[in-house]
Image 1 (tube, one colour):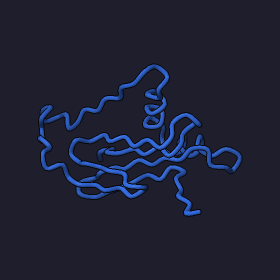
Image 2 (image 1 turned 135 degrees about the vertical axis):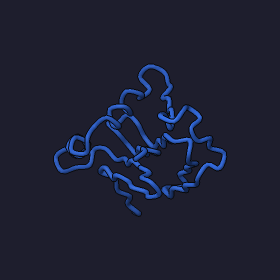
Image 3 (image 1 turned 90 degrees about the horizontal axis):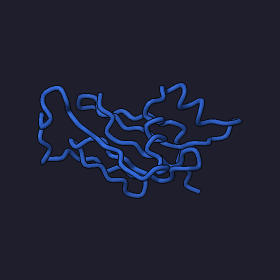
Image 4 (image 1 turned 60 degrees about the vertical axis):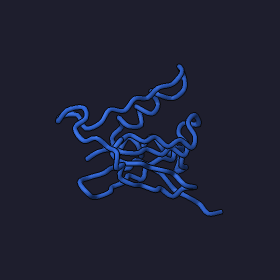
Length: 116
């Protein structure tokens, strides 16, 4: 299982409308809420050796949200849901997209899209 993409609509009134690609094996585009996912035909398998499939780096100024993003990625599902709903109101909206051996799996963490 490989986490390949994170989209944060809003988190903690701090991070808004951010897509973060975490895999070199795929090209992922967010086109007005529709994800376009294609295999990267130029991906070099085993570039980092057999035991490392990918390296991703978060870079930014102090206070830009690097640690907040790591907090999101480090929480288990129960904590994500518990921390994202406050008094029956949605506080945070984001989702994580995983690739699991030729299958896609996504975690919708308090994510919704209204058409109104």
